[in-house]
Amino acid sequence: MKALIQRVTQAKVEVAGSCIGAIDNGILLLLGVEKSDTTACVDKMLKKILNYRIFSDSNGKMNLSLSNTNGGLLIVSQFTLVAQTNKGSRPGFSVGASPEHGQFIYDDFVTKAKVTHGDIACGEFGGDMQVSLINDGPVTFMFEIND
Image 1 (cartoon, rainbow, N blue to C red):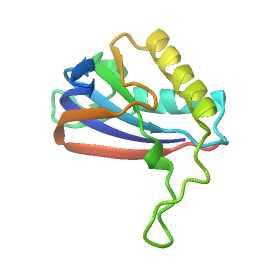
Image 2 (tube, helix red, strand yellow; image 1 turned 135 degrees about the vertical axis):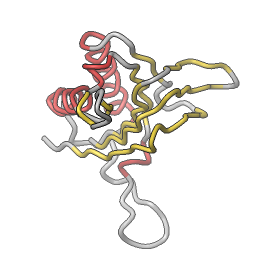
Image 3 (cartoon, rainbow, N blue to C red; image 1 turned 90 degrees about the horizontal axis):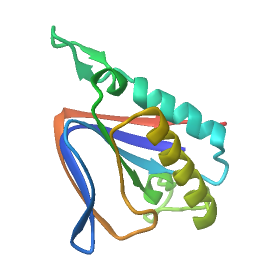
């Protein structure tokens, strides 16, 4: 499982011109699911993201997490994150999850995020989405969890 997080002052996702998910201050999460990912990977990744200290404290230091700030979390499925790009000039997707497995893992992530953290918004799994954001900083981090 791979995740790219961006600290944002606002972010939204649209499908067919309609906004289906939006947050103000918080994290935009692009989530890529691999065929070997399990619900244990979901648990590890969610804990990492909610507790990763990327927000400034009163001294301007990155000491606060999303859990500390109660910011929003916009979760967007991003199949291309798991692409293999080390050879040639075309991405390979052999490690990517099947649509069924990817949907299962994505849904599990969203469900657990909603139980654990209050302010959750989502994209549409497999949808043709337009994502817009104002990256704060910019602050962007990449995570990879393997079970």
